[in-house]
Image 1 (tube, rainbow, N blue to C red):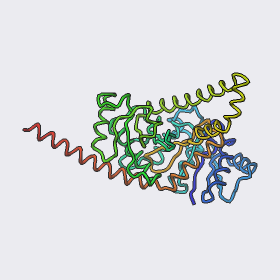
Image 2: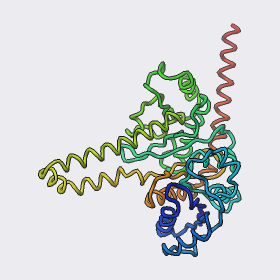
Image 3: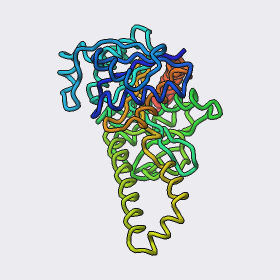
Image 4: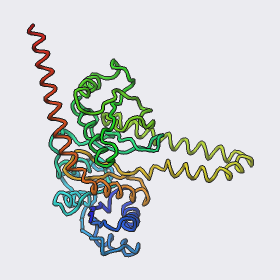
Length: 354
């Protein structure tokens, strides 16, 4: 039985989204149970109204809620009884296999990092998300906002974590390709940190394909793309904006006149299929990778469909046992990298001495 702790009060819409999503999720997964953390009376009332299967739901009271605009530092210091904090505590105490929240991203990361700590070999956790691509598969992109500035070593760690995540979730991909997001594929392109990371990646055992550009997020040619949180978040938000603009353009063109409206009716099955495939809610749920526990962040403004997919993401990752795979993989990768760096330095030292 997979147990997921849910921040029932988090996000823009709180219980009106988390409760129906919980009911939908439990109908789909008979081997799962939920710990709904929040205002006990309100949560219980909402669950009863939704006809929730209470034999697989536990309600835990939380007297506080972290607001969406609240300072992460203040939330960590002052909101120790928040639904967010208590949900993460359930993971720490091994009463839950994962935690899911649609709440304040900064507060969630700060709290999760403080409570759960990071895995051995990981300097900083990263926000990772699987993005749909043109080949009908998924591309793992990280970091998407947790680390605005990174060192070359941290970018390499992101690539390693992403590769281990893909291996754990997709057994058919035991040698996933890894790329470094840059403004061009040439070695001379990029910031000093990106250039250093490019050189460092080449010392790893990863299937490193070199620098990749923004469009490679969606070509499906690369399994994992590593970047810093600033660039990653901008790329993510730009992609969401383009998708919305494209949908607006299509609607406007089909409403232009009677003929286009008729064409729209004829094309409706195709348009619905496209809409379903491109629906951002299906890909909702980003994992905080590198922590000693599974924590999944849902989009704060999502609806019950999107939140149910975030719950599903947490369920899949917990069931796959990604923590053991990540820690073992990262330890091995970092050890080999350190050995090769030492060998490289020794070689350079010998050359200099000669």
